[in-house]
Image (cartoon, rainbow, N blue to C red):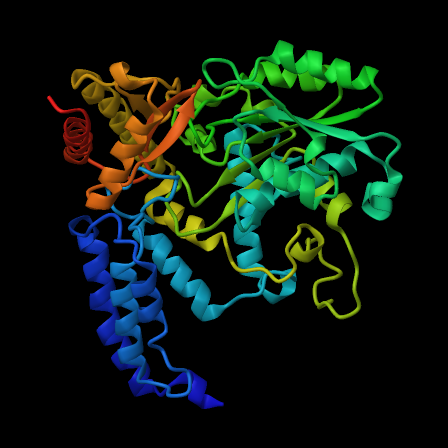
Length: 475
């Protein structure tokens, strides 16, 4: 039915209305409150004003949605959003998502979208080279996010360690498999254990040291102890940039343990992996090249719309071994060509063109553009540490990445102090920060996620926390 297309005049009119609205938001995000007032009744009332028994004009409907998004979301593209790796998307990546939606390529079968499939293959190859994997052995796949990418890693590690796992599953196990990671690792590791059928108890979360990193000697003791008790250690997961404190594990040390005990070595570099794109920050993740697999979330430090991740491995056959399947109904147009159909290569079957937003961004800005953005955000992180210390705050996390956990020395034993400051700032709409415990001390957590965050924004944040501190303790 052409009714679903709208008419040419309706589409043109919508674009004439929509583009200025989007341009206004994109240009003036910094003028908005960072956070919305949280009134569930009011928000539900606005949502339920849509009466599906009485359709309305497309322009009116879109205006209502734009107004609601402007009023009732945390504006993660705001330069004073210091949050959970939700960046401002660069504009070419926004355009890429529009193109993807309009053309709607289906990447399950290579022959349906050969250009799109080869774009993603090219990106995996290029990022594998940046990580340090041998180009002739590198393989990988785009995922919907870091959780899917980490599940992919666990499944690949299982199929690497346990012959027959792909067909026999848990019935092929002669002993309970064990995964090792930091107590600061992302909880998607636990989700991966649960969804793969291993269960949470198969994950050994090794206590992190005072700097938030796993000690390789403690890891090795745990591996040896488990082996002696009849368990089957099969995987070590290192983290390059933990969510809470930005800590980076001893990637070389973990690699040595994994190699000595023939364990699959995976690095969750969802955020910190982008450091490989800058010569100065590359050394922070030295050892990443020793991994069997790595994940990098494109929607974090690479500044594109939610959500996108890359799973990259140095073992060319492992994805096929883990996911390959044949069906009669999938297209056979390219079966005589040397290609890989994505549905045989990953958890996903039907697939969106996830990689275009990164591909177009690199076409426009290149490696140098990304290197400069990483350098800028790192500088803003260093500036935030400096200004906080000048204003009587103490920084209590240890990372070179632009993530700062801080508190007041006199009130570090009072968890309500930082919680109250965070709540005051969020309610004010001036910024978004969170609270995270660091070595038992409740800290305010501020992460530089936006390439437009400037010294003025840093000073504004410190001014806000100073004001909140005075309101709470006086003086």
